[in-house]
Image (cartoon, rainbow, N blue to C red; front, side):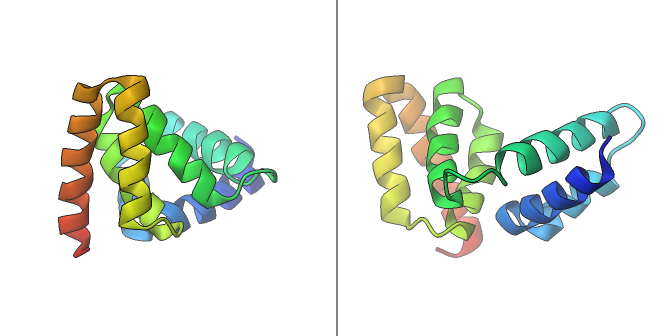
Length: 125
């Protein structure tokens, strides 16, 4: 593990997903899944999220679309929070999810709308 890349990725991950969530993920990791936490933090959150070329708002839009396509509701809810933290509005998230209905399928988009709505409620939005 590259400690510098991990630390930079950890800062980005906390800024996007929220420090409480990220710190709990790290704190609750054990010998089995800590390597995955390290990999995700170093490569997803530093090597990709910290690249120039796309801002965080755009990266969040892409993640919402991809997570809908992959039918990953837990990750989608998490990235709805990240999208809000990255400056997306509720209306922009709605538009991303409407776009996914056409390209990923209506059932996938319906599930994503449901999960986004749950996250909005949790966040008081």
